Image (tube, rainbow, N blue to C red; front, top):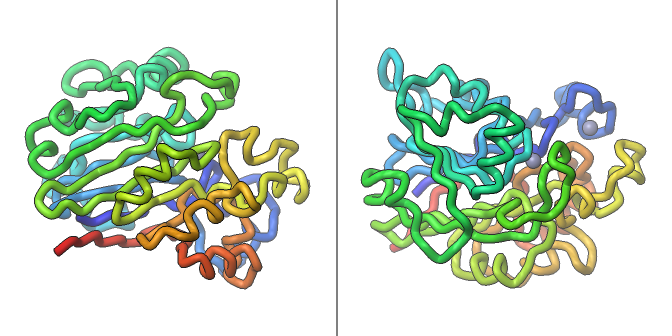
Length: 303
Ligand SMILES: [Zn+2]
Ligand SMILES: [Zn+2]
């Protein structure tokens, strides 16, 4: 199995068009890599791909990833789009996919589907040739719902995680507001937990993190108060539905004892870990964790 981080940033990317923070300025000046918005591709054979979230940067991300180039005059290299939530930065790529006459499947929880269909007008993906599967988190393998070809390669579980509805829907709580996915390759048993958004690293996430070979984690913010402190936005990380990486109750403290490969994704441009010289980045490295970057290849093998 191979995981490709197509986009490693949170909403806005790095640089964000209206942000003059030090991380955004370093990216503009060429002193740090630019980062597109969060999207992750997974494949067992590097021919058929599953996408976890689709950002507005989709075209640029696909262009930078030869494995995702069309194999014919018009061809779609992915079988399904798995959505973790209804945030605009994770779903705006659907607007680009309107040009696609090939069938693909969208997977989300019922509440996410209903928000995207009613508020963002994506009901076209609930009609042929496409299908939109609305599933609540459960222990059930949903791969067969996507199709036999995907089910032959993967077991797919939807994991309930703590989180909030998007800002445009009031940022309240709702069943299925945010989920994570576990993809397990049938041939090898290799598995990845993809959890780019959560407001708390709870026991359910811990259980899945312990048993997955690779874990992709919400790395939006290092400190709960970094945005108000740096004058970027009044809101804290947790009020936006993201557990911070650092601090006594942060994600790093929870995962520092795990032995598997742990990678922070969905990095907000305010996050000091984007500067490798920062204390935050050094804390992440000292815990044996990694910071994702656009184009990162994560092969997962089991023998
Ligand atoms: Zn996001
Ligand atoms: Zn910035």
